[in-house]
Image (cartoon, rainbow, N blue to C red; front, side, top):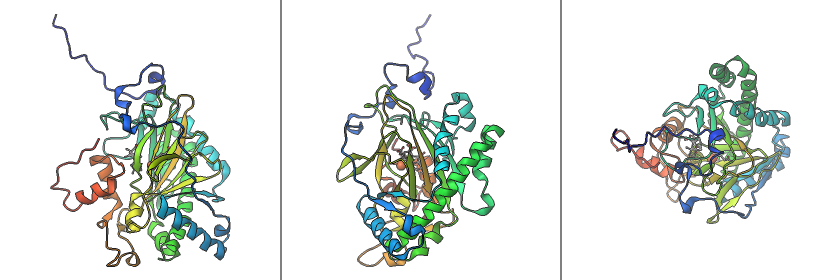
Length: 371
Ligand SMILES: C=C1C[C@]23C[C@H]1CC[C@H]2[C@]1(C)CCC[C@@](C)(C(=O)O)[C@H]1[C@@H]3C(=O)O
Ligand SMILES: O=C(O)CCC(=O)C(=O)O
Ligand SMILES: [Fe+2]
């Protein structure tokens, strides 16, 4: 009987209820030494934007808020926002109802399985998408549209994928995304003011946004110092509004070292992404960040990724381009960059540069693999 020395490897599946009972973690989840998390990082003092006065239409508060946002975005591309007007019960429900989905059996979650090359759906890590440096997380991503005729797409998504029982939860995330979209547009007013292009410029650009909502679920890991929940990256999107739910884990690369950003109960973390870096012609930083896991508690985060609708051309306003400030990135549309991240390139800290050399004649370039 020939010995089958090709041990039949069953395909790797990230099922935390199975993996967390093993002494070791699969090698695909073990990151290179130089990328592993370090213990006891110093805290990053993140600027705090209080929106109370601005939302009350107080002019002095608006100018002060625009100044704080501008300085924060030039420095590290990140700030916190409080008194944001997002209903506390809605935020509490959005955090709580994540468990209703992620605690389902894997086979049931896979009813919403993300398909290859698509950004929506459920992913248990990215086994099958990447071959190494797998993140220790499960995610559920879905579209939000600011277009009135698509006001119910989140609720319809949950009902269509998970059945009638999930329509109620879909409504909660739809209301949550609507609140995120409103907050994003208020922040876009401040960004426009801070860049000297006026309050309406970016608000109009993102009014009918076509954004991505992502629920991040990080199960406890028995070897948290060997893996990452989310690898180092800049969000390729425009603006991210992130809520960390009680358990810390977000880290930002600032002043040449990784720093932790602790959860602040009623605050959102806001960070600039690659698309807004391009819109600002390099004036504002796309924040480099990652997420670590722990061995004791599940960590959850909710990330709203603001993105322009598909026909908007990403091009900096003319006030931000001059002979002393030449164009840095090519014109592009968000769907082209999104496709690049879903089919050709694993987003990291160099996505926009890799994309810029790919996009002009990408039909002729060989595939860029970096996973
Ligand atoms: C457009 C997106 C791609 C990712 C989700 C959103 C914005 C952030 C991106 C991501 C989180 C950056 C790190 C790598 C990634 C593969 C991940 O760990 O999830 C990225 C997302 C994705 O491509 O699915
Ligand atoms: O979970 C976090 O704190 C960060 C997640 C993140 O950066 C992302 O999903 O893009
Ligand atoms: Fe991110």
